[in-house]
Length: 135
Image (cartoon, rainbow, N blue to C red):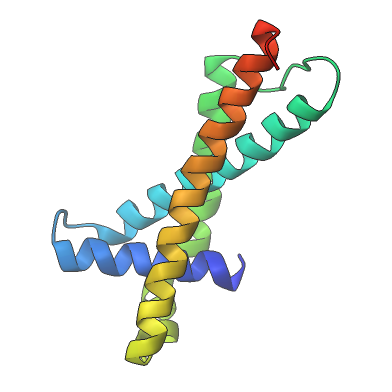
């Protein structure tokens, strides 16, 4: 997994620990990262769909297939972030940040979250317009 996604995981993990909203911040961070990554993939596929002349069907167009893919994805991310307490290693990797690096990292993480949702909804809106024949 790339350093960027490990850093996003770290920030989400730290925020979950600081807020104290649950007793398993590593799971909260992992599930949140998985949702963001899936939104990124869906945005990319929808962008391709928007750029081609006709709609193509995705291979995971039914709910059972979507659930199977999501669970498989969570299992893979479990081994990246949680298995054998890897989240502790990730925390150690980024724990010695300076205050400036912490601020910059928080801004980058928030920008990533905003762009992930913003681009997803923008592309979905454009697809809706195209499907209505107004785009």
